[in-house]
Image (spheres, rainbow, N blue to C red):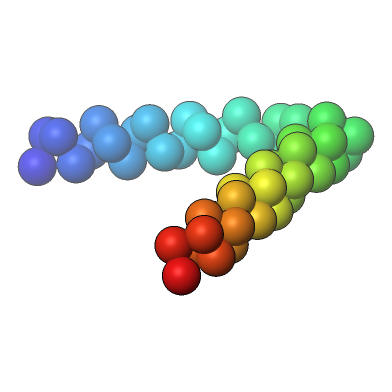
Length: 52
């Protein structure tokens, strides 16, 4: 039980940090994450095509 509480506490701290960001840095972080996701998906798609 103690281990779960520590994990939960860590998650709350992460959420708190996100909520303290102003709109501009938050939007920038979302844009960067979106680009990384698109790049990873494109790389995965390319890799699948080469295996066919």
